[in-house]
Length: 103
Image 1: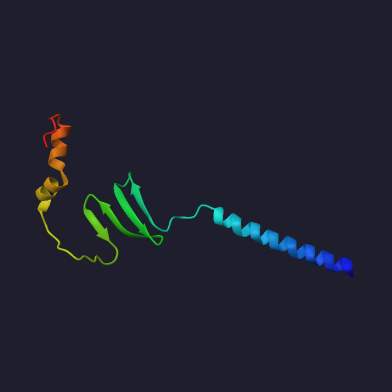
Image 2 (image 1 turned 180 degrees about the vertical axis):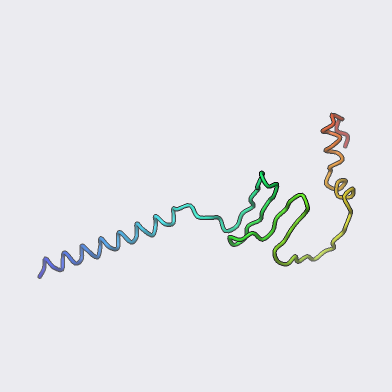
């Protein structure tokens, strides 16, 4: 009888150890990120992934959002030339053309 209990205890310990190893092995597996910013160079898109789902993307046409946009300020339309000016694109184009930087 004593030997039976000893074998039962050994089996319980072995099962508990195996369960522990299996749970920790799953934690180490590479999981898909739930929140990420993914640059797709080939498609020319920057995707924003939240909770494992694409929430927004930037491409040459602009910003595309799946759900709502909440803001507390103003939205201003500067047009293409206003955007280029504010984003420093004109200065960038001058530098690219070989002109010197003039702050």
